[in-house]
Length: 611
Image (cartoon, rainbow, N blue to C red; front, side, top):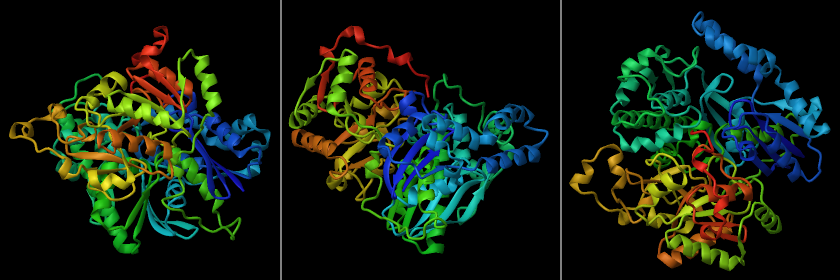
């Protein structure tokens, strides 16, 4: 049985394909259209999934949320807050009445344009938003039973849900409803500190260690009432997201000492302290929720999904809290993952077939999240030749040797190998790599390659078998969604003068043997690399360790600020020629910057809208 899942029309649209309960393909539309967080119908992603179906008929199509329930929430919210919010109402209603309310017809038209057989009304079903999130985490997890916690901005009505998975049954048992939302609270601070909502939340998380949580108590006293069991309510007098076109209002500005930062304004210590404060509040809410749910259910396995599950700092604290034996986090935890969850929900719907049994695999069924398109060697060579690239074709051994040598020499390396990752993280298939031992690598990659803020941290890719030697973690973290401290034996104590530094001044202090991936609080966002799911990347890090004694690489996504992660060999070559990446490996093709035609260089800094 083939089930196609689709998420679309808000942000990060995607498609996913299941065959008899196994993931055959999953991809985000942005990777094909080159439009970051593309919200449109995922025509290219669906077409890719159909290619992976290899001509077989799709049995069922499931959309990741229920539009009528969402419209109900919208109307009830406007009525509840009337007459406030008329400007927002006037903006939203024509779009909903003209298009979104009739998404079944829209979806059927778009699907039929790709394949007439997909336009069958009987094939199309709808799944609630948070159930899609929960299914995306539970069904591919390695657990036969688990507590499933989903948290995001808002779906139809729910903003937070707790579900219990037992075998092939998954049931939501508790929820918190809009307008009370931890995701929207975090997004309010994303907006207030000058970053883009639904895009810049991870910047707030990265900025937090540069500040002190001076405003955490203010947040608890005025903005959010959190009960001992983690349930919460927001004081809506400080927010505008229910009725306005912004996240916060004047009372919020007064409470925190000024208007929102404009994106072009310099970051000040106050903004860093605000980031630290909302992160501390998020940590506390997640800890209270997971502790209470663990005690109530007695379950020892936890699954996480929804946009808040991308907060790897809070995830790491939940893991270290020890209430659960194991945690699985859906790598595409945001709305893109809803496509996969919708497909799972359709497959495991017990009203259709009671003979289906849950399939569990170790470490999970996500295949390392390598679920997107790949390119055969001959195709890579044809594509590179077509864009004027000069390359050398080498054997597998030489590819690893030359790439490891370039990394050991301090070069920035583009790495385009195998199937593209599903989700927001590059995991060694579409990555920019560097030497973590370099004291200048973080700043160089941020300013000269990524063209983004210098404070942004980079993640370490580490061999799974060596992770406990270098970090305070001895667990799988294949999707870069857990934060842990660098091992004390690899850390350098700061001097008194260094400890007294504030804000961005902390950036240049060397803290460890791997400074390029050690954040200012001695933490790191860890990816464990497994030979079973990515043997070529594992071999590269192993060879780098043989050359340097270090089983760790800097791993950041293969793109520049505002650009989606590269998909095709042409995308990779364009990024290579528009940045200061010095070495590029695509399949078995090796490219060196100094050998390329300088006329092919691109002005990449201005090519994409800042995120």
